[in-house]
Length: 315
Image 1 (tube, rainbow, N blue to C red):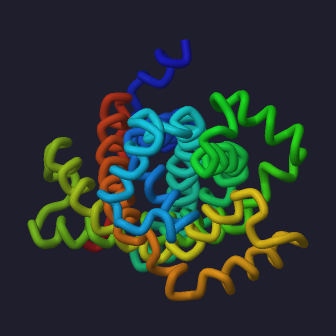
Image 2: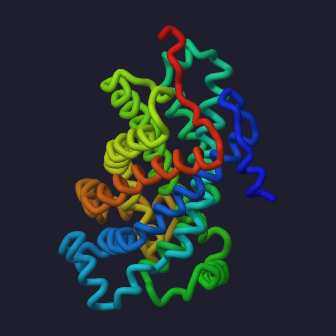
């Protein structure tokens, strides 16, 4: 029933509830697939961030260490939480960006919106990501705990049960501050840079999205997604390191969340916050972001939805 409704075609100018549902579904699918596929990279990245003394051989060396000590299946640790968490996050993130972006354009008018594309991207991404992270945070807490301690749980449901018993509901949201600090700037950069990069590619070709085939537009999304992913990874990396460490048992000592975060930041140091694990994260996020925009466009096309693009009314 839901599938048949989503497959109903959307007219080009009809950005209604059904369009937003299709955007949300496409976002959930693209985020779930890409994050799940990169789980092995994320496992190694998280290990490097949590224990850089032990895992000090870079990305490839980290892979070899994990496999040698724990077996190849250790690289899939947290896969269930990753796939479920990022489907939910992608649903609200991509669906929310489309919703806030289109409504901003409709409220401002095309000419004013065209002149304010970047602020619209930034505001839409910040609002959508904040909502998405409230739903993502519990699943991300279980994922990070299971990666940091492979003996912690036997799956997503077991991890939820153990965390709830040991720490209560608050345990699921211990990382909400850093996850917002990581994800909101990351998503703002991701959508704003991708939009600007895609526009630059179209301008260099002397074409608009409507002049190209769906395959060519997906190619533009992939190329601009790589640029956006690397930029977003660099901007959000310090908060990502804090998030990885705050979910480790005993990290930062006792006391309120922000006191613990401050303790971790002092222990690690600013340079290390910005650089430890950065290269594998750039590889991961650059690949992931390109894949997300490519899959998003593909799914939207499959669902019969014509993706919204900013339009210069004076062109």
